[in-house]
Image (cartoon, rainbow, N blue to C red; front, top):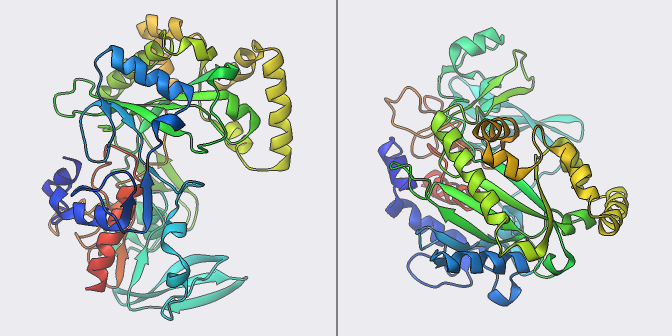
Length: 453
């Protein structure tokens, strides 16, 4: 339904039957072999086996079973609501990034490939209305790279910024920023979509902690429908038995309430200075339908976390918000390892400290039961603490030539500009109901074929 909607929105050739071959091309699924899955692609896809599931994942399975919620073994091929084994792009030892999966020894040895590191592209090189290369800082020097075609893949937050600084975007905004207008495209930076999320942390008892293997924290999740008649399977609740690599993260589970099909739209604009920082507005919950679904979803998550199936493994639960402090603590440094080990030792000795320490990471009411029992408190909590995932899409969206809001055509070519394509998540007309990693690889695979042709 997500991809058929892309085609209906003007992205011709991007319906489900069109994109499925490229999903198959990019993956090797180690668990399922059928018409829905690839068997010889560069990206490994696997799920954790039952005997690898940590205690919280099994608790979720028992919770689902008692309530006749089906187990979805293949969430990439069985699109029902249910308790899902989460498919992961990973080897047995680590996540499989695009670089790991695609830049293998054979690819790196190609004579027509040069990989330049430590480089920052600063500008497009134009000849008339065509792009013929880029200028980049390499080792402190400006270097021009000429090309028959330039493919921009800076992501849904940075690709529109790059176009705007090149004079491609809404004419009025460009002039306000003192940028010469090369092409008036009002859709550049508009239509920003992301999956809004709310987080609950659980300080685990020793018997609830995830073993050292498997290393990945994504094991299982609930996929369900909010009741919105226009949007089934729009909600997602993850169960992550650890929240980070460090000692404190090993003791803290994370339960995420995620809206997979938001109606709200944001934008990426310039801050008024050429080459300046982008101004990003996600506008989460600007559509009241999103607020209502997130309120109901958070209430449901609290009820799951506080159910009898999970109680034996959890000491305390409390709401949290992803902050810069948490992000800095997640950096893999010796200092962070030492600090978190000290903190974890204190938490083991005095579990009550968890409520005091992590209470500082959320604004407003700290007691989960108090939040969900009062509609006003619940709304205030959702509005104040909603955050986003790294699932940004839509800011250079595909569309028909006569669509004034389209930025690229169905082959990724920037409207009315020669020699320039965009091939990342920014071209997606709508955010898929799932993680955007594999859909982004699919987009790149499909546009690569168009560019080669």
